[in-house]
Image (cartoon, rainbow, N blue to C red; front, side, top):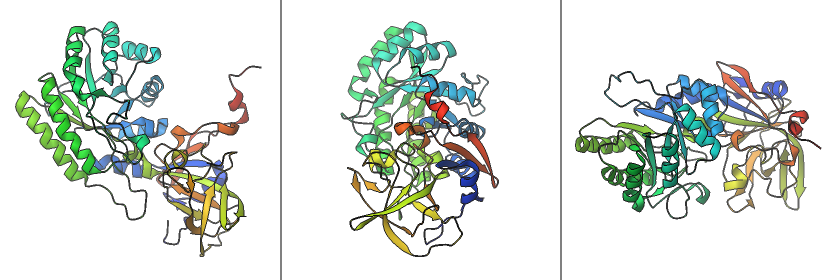
Length: 426
């Protein structure tokens, strides 16, 4: 995007060309940006992608080829990981670093539904347990299994209260004060606790994320020498708004590496250090291409209405999330004049506004003057974008394309009207 809010290309491919070829709304992902973000975290022993952020098979395959492992939070995500080329079991060959082997897929949840319990038992998937009831349910099906505990440290933080995953207001994880009792239950059930995981929220800042290291160290000492893996969780911030910058990842790793080393000295063996990013790996790679279909005034406010709605990208209506936007004029007549507009979609809902603040208040954005037929590009949409899309108002799900080496490849077809009613009966 240039300084006047215009954009004619995404990763070397023309925006108008993409719209003509694949229709709108359309999700497009920059493959090289994903690879770059994977490389950013190379210092960690294991980078484990929280695929709930962006679970397209082509994206998962790209991330797998970059050496990143995967987290699954449902039976469907387990099967997605397998379809993208991940294996259920770790390679038990000796690691030249002396570290314990990493599990290619980890199932993380606060409950087992019946299908997920069947899947992890049948496939031998390692489990990150967020409740003590999961331990006994797993032990009945997989006696002697090793497990990871997801612990709620008693505090949390996030870009929205809805993305805060720690403290009393969060359902996630085993409450830190219950660890002694949970360890007794695990021992009674014949399970071995080999991993410890903490995650306090998504989109938080490094100062709050750093507090987790001390909390994890205290719980690790309660668990003892059976521990072979610790996970710093995810939540790495991404700069969405002007003036925001990328976090000091080197300093963050140094902090966690020091925690790991202290535990290694105490336990007398190597410990694998994991991080579990979601949005960090894919957010900046994603672009939602939409077409301007109407421009109208409501009193003193001007609205630009596009063919994508919160059925396509839900983050603004859920969290008041901010996404950068740019315009691609359809006729190559680049509009230079900026104007303040509210951007909304086609849904029969007053909340179908992309420029809103937390609480649902309509805001405006300074954008180049648009005409019907121009393309609006909603940026940094590669995390919690398509994966949260729906068929609300019986709208088909959009297509997805992967952009690599200046070429576009269709990686999900647009839904058809026939797809919308498939499986239904009168």
